[in-house]
Length: 140
Image (tube, rainbow, N blue to C red):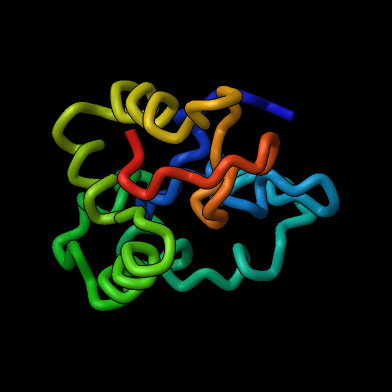
């Protein structure tokens, strides 16, 4: 499995698909929101943010470029991720806008590594999928 972060795996909503359990699983993996894979998972096909008419334009790479940013839908998703997974898509989008996508990806690679074995962590699990060490919720 790919062990590095990739700019192409950052979704328009600010989700880092590389950290998603769907991307990490061995059986029926997701290839990320920006993938053109024809066997797209139904959850990705039906994603209301991904299919938002305001950001479907090729000139808008991320939700922060939308006049409605942050919209109600993104706020709800962000609240769920902050509460359950200690990650904020809105914070991610602000960081991408401030420092650029490349520096954001480098920071994510450092932040979401297991401090015991060095594997990438999943935002959706409270432990490392490789060594099972509990994830530090205050992340690096």
